[in-house]
Image 1 (tube, one colour):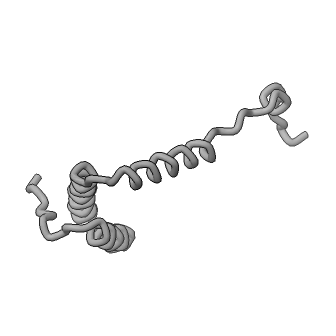
Image 2 (cartoon, rainbow, N blue to C red):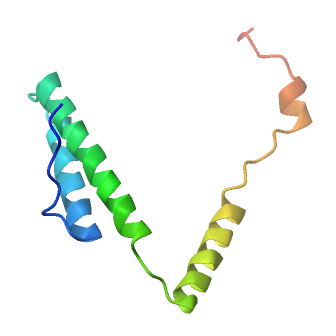
Length: 96
């Protein structure tokens, strides 16, 4: 596999735009499996570049506090619902 050059993408916006383009290309029914795999490799390289950008970002204390608050709120809203006892103990209906 040849290394994909993603050096031209320097911002999250550029990476996001290119990823949108890749998704559109992969969804095209006329794209071969080999081309789809090449596009997938590019998407992986772009994802790695985005992670590198995040790792290199220096947040101010205020930004870090806002990020932590946003993450805490997201965790509260993503808690899985517990199944009820009735739903767990009832046998499945076979339609009769």
